[in-house]
Length: 113
Length: 115
Image (cartoon, rainbow over all chains, first blue to last red; front, side):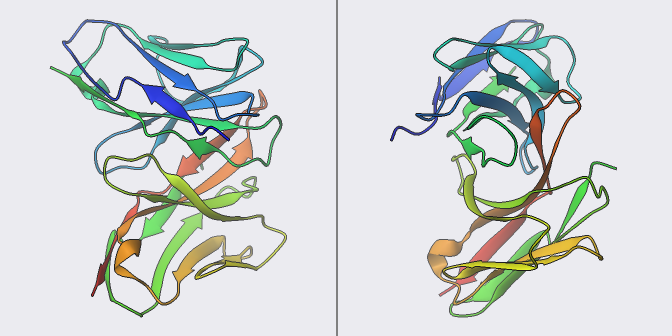
């Protein structure tokens, strides 16, 4: 069984740029959620994708967007980067439906200068 | 109210002792309560989880105690070992109106086990 993988591991961008982060879900999982974890904080829910559609969103502006592909992998795109976007971005995968455990990847550390 | 409040912020326990971390929530619509363990530079790893229809769940050295009426739940780590030193997060989950199961996390507890 392959776990959740994310790429890249680290990324440095400057304010105003755009970034794309990638996630491959665990084998057998068709739902992907994205979280932002600021230093010293708990993860914050950004959005969830199921069957290639966004089916839930947290308190994040529209410049945070995503995609899910037919193989259930996913992308997180952030436009017009701000300094406060510096964080660890986590992807979690789960099986269809509610009440299922979410398994996290190692994260992508984004630094915005 | 979507918050989950976690305490203490940091905890130091001697090897072999019991580590106890507490969480409280307000929203009675939460229906799934997991605990995650996170090491520096890694993603959170699911430790153990409970649903509100049971009051306790034990897996190895880890036990969740759940008090539905008080809207509180706690993690107990028995026979704590130096390898347990990590940051622990409680979380709560409920289905959103669109169907997403989103996790709401506590602020985290940095646990240090002294040898």
